[in-house]
Image (cartoon, rainbow, N blue to C red):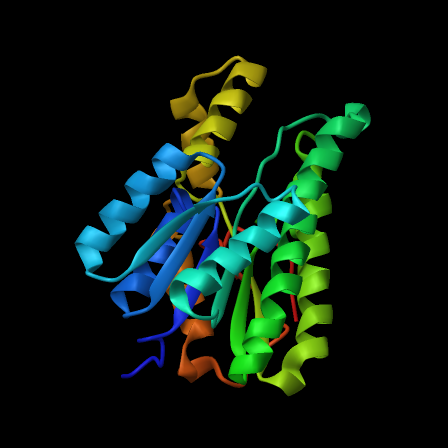
Length: 264
């Protein structure tokens, strides 16, 4: 079934690894030309080469820091200069540090908010004009399950991700008449480099092994495994595709059934 993605131009933030890399790869396989950004240029360039070699599609690496408005303006300008316009934005970049809720330092939470919440807002604000000029577009925001599941040791995740879910709906309402659809994905425990770092931190904090943390994590996931980055990419592809042309302002979890809330 045609997806309508072939020939489109996509920008994926946090695109050098994990969910961002999987999503950029999936888009490239569907025939999209893709710009990926991250702060680490060497890894970014290597990822772009590998995706391009495996898919045959154009992949452009552009270094950008989500805390910098100037970087994001240049990121969008560079993408449009290289690829002509922007049809698709996948907001995925994150930079966070765990800390107990009762001890959460200003710099930790402000960095998390500035990178993720403000980074998503800055990128979305910059691409909307290009999408309006083209007659529409798709924005997908990746925001973790911390928006639904509280954590005493990682409250920053809840604060930022719930904020992104709220912003998704507000932006969707604002730009729907321009043909721009905006949705949010809540990944559950996903097997990424960052997730493994969090597992190691938890293991050190609780005095157990990383394998024990992994076993406890999987025990709370009904499907019996951690989510893979490709699971997130598959939903992103659907939301970007022509098959999802009536879906906007929604927040959908890909968590293997781990969420305990009833969301309707």
